[in-house]
Length: 551
Image (tube, rainbow, N blue to C red):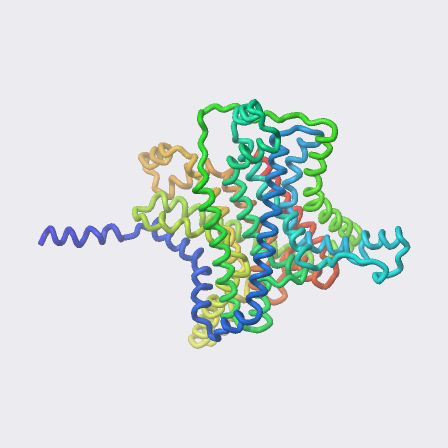
């Protein structure tokens, strides 16, 4: 009997959760919950319109999304890789500053770039006005100009905004390669193109694949750009099916298609990186020495590196800045002040909540006695891959049901109508932000804690510190720089997030991103310019951090 009792009680002890394990599991569950909610609603809709979607709009949504995603991915991969190669392997006039300037398009949301491009190229814009004045044309009937609001224009704008993802990762991969490898290839008669194609690119392929996958996932997630260019994609399908047709189940079904597409991109990126493994042959390898260029080659390299920067940053930034300067009165608009305040409140709250939860989760996994939290921790990163519109579907429906149930219960018990506490406030937006950007905070925190020597917290514990005391007195002071960086990065992404904010905001509640969208949708670019410029200014903070980290 004693042995049997021991056999019975042993598993129970292993399954018993300590406070750190329980807290880590709770955080992981809250992060994963919206994704599971989307899947549940998609398979259990109140009204199944799946056959209708398949026979009508879904093929068009899916086709446009695939064309847009593949085209943007291909352009970003080619542009980012070529730029990274030129910046790393060659030295020419302007190359020193251009290697940082080509990060700046990350500061401008793609939807801002879309508004700027249309304003620049439309009939009343400077390009067509200049052409009519130059050639004496009187009206649009006298000449043909490409359609601006089209799938092609969306591809151009998204490529100009997203190529830095590939450039950043490919540049890091090229810089880590051995200069001796390229010297051997050159001694064997390999020219510049062959050295790139046969030596540099294969070694950097995992990094290029990772950057391209991020650009493609951002393309699938985009709403503001494709909506402004009237391109019907899966993301716009969620908005139209939910807000116009009033069918939440159909929106969840479209969202599930997006999830499948996103997971396929992640899987392809993982498989590509797993099959391509390269190792350093020595601890100390000679870095790549840049080859100086002069004359025509230098001019060509300069032009190649300047064009993406001009398209992705100078053009949209210049257009928005000119409108902001031409309309100074819009800077003191009360609506702009409210939007700025709301942005600071929800973005700041989400950043603090997200980083705090990530800090607890990462530390809790380290302290947990159960292996379950460690197994679930990778699942908490899927929120970053899920578009904001998908998370909104997964959050709003269950939160609205919970809100109504709680309000009815309180009213039945006390006679007081408390209203909708979660969906009637900014709570849902903050929750969506926390899920969407949890991976950023978790990654930064986990990497920072991994750099702390285990002997330091062990010494603190041996001196009587509790687990919480060791976190407060040892880990936090040592990783506060990384925690601060994570706070800023999460805040910046919250400021730029548009789809989740549009779907989850209470009535008449604007952030900077939604104010830009509303004013630009009404063709009031002058009013959209100040909030857009504020969003860009916040984005520049994140780009500055990236540049500092990649010196």
